[in-house]
Image (cartoon, rainbow, N blue to C red; front, side, top):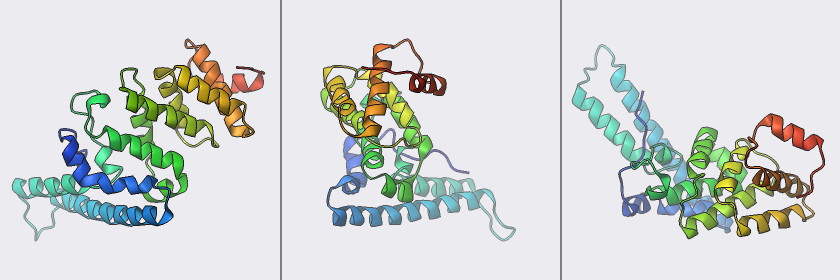
Length: 231
């Protein structure tokens, strides 16, 4: 078994040095995305090989003696390899306990934006529903700076524009955390658009924003669907 990978105690420069290439995953240019995807595949293969070596140190053969130093070295190699790919690099909790001061925050949002803009590529190369859910829940706080808040509004807008994907329901938490004129304006535009998914999802989110006491459960969703609501 392995410990959680990542670089929760690292600084901004460390994360950028290891993962700046990952911005290519959300590039509009398909060739740039293809290059970033190829690099991600290589990085994940290296991390997987390192993880298997860690496991081997805990299940040695009769001909292989393993010391505590060997295990520590294997774990260090895995942590280093995992810190250079996604989603593995995001599997460490923020050292401070607050995601808005975590050096990995830009790459957490990048990971979610990648899933929102290029869902098929994300699913093929880095599908991690649990990671998506965990990051969205951690991001659903009100004390983000303006730039992060704007990015979160973008993510909610992207989510309501498309057919539902696993864990998209968690974006309601973010919508409630960053509720305001910008978000509501985007949601109303989506509701008035000709996109049936946007009409449905935006209408539901707007209704929940107007009823903060209502939990966002499957039962509430089904009940809302059975009625007629006009935001």
